[in-house]
Amino acid sequence: MSTTTQAIPDGDVGNGAATAELPRLLQILRALAGAGWTHYVERLRLRHAVFDAASETEKTSLRDAKRFREMLEGLGPAFVKFGQLLSLRRDMLPERCIDELQKLQDDVAIFSGHEARAIVERELAKPVVELFAEFDETPLAAASIGQVHTARLKDGTRVVVKVQRPGIEPVIHADVNIMRFLARRLELHVPESRRFGPSNLVEEFARLISDELDYHIEARNGDRLRENFKKDPDVFIPRIYWDLTSRRVLTMERSLGHKLAQQPPDLPGGRQVAEKLMRSFLKQVFEDGFFHGDPHPGNVFLLDDGRLCLHDFGIMGETSAHDQEVLGQLILAVSSADVAWMVDAYFEMGMAAEGVDRQAFTRDVTKALNAYYEAAGKGYSFGEIARQFAQLSQRHQIQLPRQFLLVSKAFMLIEAQALTMDPSFNALASLREYVPRLLRRHALQGLNLPLADFSRGFRTLRSLRHAVASLPDMLNRAVEVLSSGRATLHIEHDQLQGLEGHIDRASNRLSLSLIIASLVIGSSIVMTFHSGPHYWGIPLLGLAGFVVATVMGLAWAIAILRSGKL
Image (cartoon, rainbow, N blue to C red):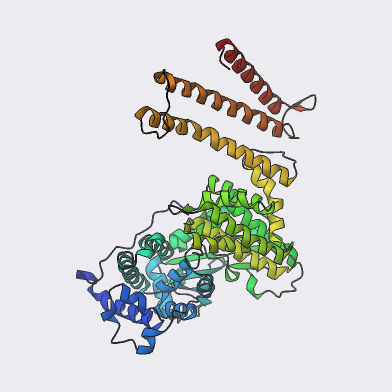
């Protein structure tokens, strides 16, 4: 997302102006020790800071996921938010820890309505009575960064006003600086942590929390999502009132409905709600390239008129055309139970460490998925398959980009809610139905092939494309090695100087053959199209491809025959 954010300044804990952070640092270290993490505190070379405060039991207690989650909640908003970011990292943390982190709650007291009114007046530079016909000082909801009040505009429109908690920004800035300090110590003294990039993780969190502290960014996200769904009759995105919005105050249209979490399991029309939910999410990921990153049940409402309504636009994700293609491949691979293709797609979206054993990873994936398929029968879950991959990634040191982890988490949240609405809902079936729309995004309009046949064809075309693209570089490198004398293969030839020319001609022939093969395969697929211009029932695009391939093939054959060198 291309937005201008105010970065959190990088302070150096313990030096100069940051000295005020030392008591907070000690509090955090003692909390870590109390949660059973004394071993890591010692490895950070900060043992002296906690031993007076930690009891002998605390020093020797085992690390426990629940205690870790409770510790984060006790340390306040910044650590709760950081824990929520960590809950995405199935490639980094064990499953029991992920499950606990997903339970993180903002346990914060509300601040007074009088304070909220004062913040609104200061931010919008007018008395509340001039801005609103009504302003309820009793908050509708409260969270770590802000709380929500209901209000009514002068024209009678019902709105909600999100007001940022007073004094929260410097508190979060101080905690982020302490996180930076601890991340640097971790990388310095705990070598095995470096592959996860603790400092990079903290900097990513600093950017995210900076965005959440600026309500202008959330408002822009809401506007963008509203624009994307303006023609969708099933989804409603509240309007943002920009003249009543600032960095610390956000005013938006109030929707009349109830949270999806409050709906009964036997809700009439639950199947339709589940389908709308899944369809709207797939549209965001594969068509708009901009999706809600935290669609938990509290952020999804069912309106009185049956439409879905999304709230809280602080965490959003983006998918590029390449991201969409790779995710689409993964969907096709899962749909056709093609483990080798799943691994190909997964490696393309991941960042494998040096020396990762791809064959061992494939074996583990095959074993895990076969066991899962056997247990689940036909009712297996795409979200659960993503979970299996993430667990294996941790074991094999494959680190995934945040956007893919965010898509995975959001999908699992959507799938869980859809199953609540309709226990028989099959998310993977929805994905299969969505595949043709995804393919149209890649100019394969009108395709009417069985899924398995198309999967094989698509994978073949992709392999050919990669082969053609990489062949010149590969051959050039080979020629360079041979020319420089670094090759370990010894060749005796009385005309070694002409070897480079022979290889160059061979590479040209091989490249041309791959291009012709691609044209033939592509034209064969296009011949199945039912759309586009036809002549005597034959698609002109496919016919043109065959003609070009034939002409190129004949010209190539004649050139070879004339040279007398087959």
